Image (tube, rainbow, N blue to C red):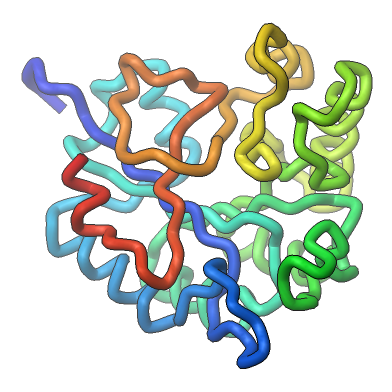
Length: 238
């Protein structure tokens, strides 16, 4: 990229792709058709798909980034993602990141008991297949507890153990973290130091709009929180 203007990066944060069960009112389900509409809107508006390697390079050198780029992310690694969302993104060459809470791999979303419908989390075999097809599997910590509720040693363990589990099971490097609930921890405790020590290069919150990499806090990058009624066109105009 040339010129003095700063590139803009839009990171979209999804959870579940599909329809909410009839007996639940959940904002976290986004129909597959809406996901496809979001991607089409971004591409039609001139936003280019971004993978994590290029994002990390752009945080070091913003000139490496396109003028406008986007990254698709999913929190919690729900098994339903394998049915439509991730195969569709793979087939269309759109990079995606799945943030997995390692204590729940192959199990259920017990961290949302009584708050959200029961859903199965992807197993290690599923994650291995996705990883082999170019989906980035990254850390959503271990227990999905809010960092502000943890002591510093507990936070250290969440960062270290989740990264180690994914790397040992799937190979490759875990460089990215999505904070559970978008919560980086109590004020006065700098997440950057903890994450650097654990070997992370960037981390994401939940909420916000597009950002410029020159001024961004790489350990608290904003994401557009996506639900079924998200006005993405308005969000990317911010």
